[in-house]
Length: 69
Image (cartoon, rainbow, N blue to C red; front, side, top):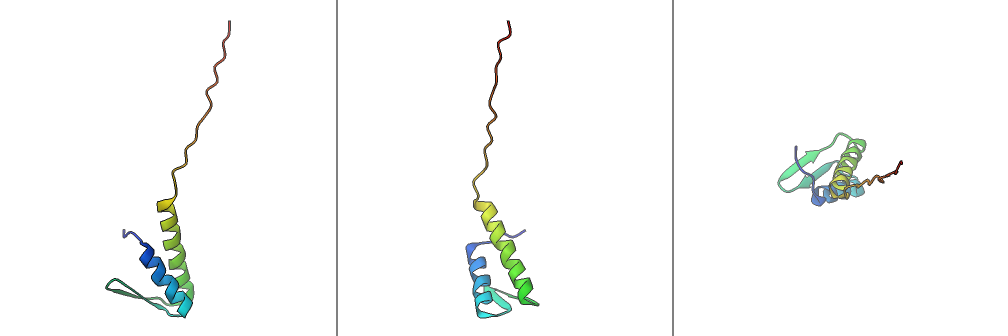
């Protein structure tokens, strides 16, 4: 599995803004079938980047001690 970068997201967003179905980044060219496919790819990359940068969630449970005598 490849790791997405901010450059990948920028390339896709530039193609969407320009109305292009072809995206170029590094030495690769990807041709999408439709704008819908392009936007799905953008959403996948954006969510992957967001998940990679999201802080870990910490859950603390309170400890309850009862003194029964």
